[in-house]
Image (cartoon, rainbow, N blue to C red):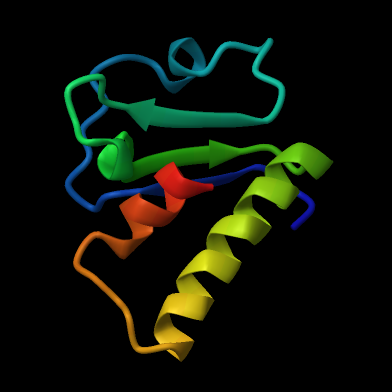
Length: 88
């Protein structure tokens, strides 16, 4: 990908200006984390913003491979996307 991408839940609600949400200094990724979740759910899959940098592409490549391998080996789980984001 050559442009920033945004992934978010369909029911996400933003109450402030989008320009205020993402600081201009953001270099690669914006993820939502929970300090109270088990380690396999620390990164929430409801929102992700990625600029087209090599670091972001590398991370998302690992996430995609993790998910693909789980489908290939028939070991998918509920919240697999969240598990992949946290594991990678």
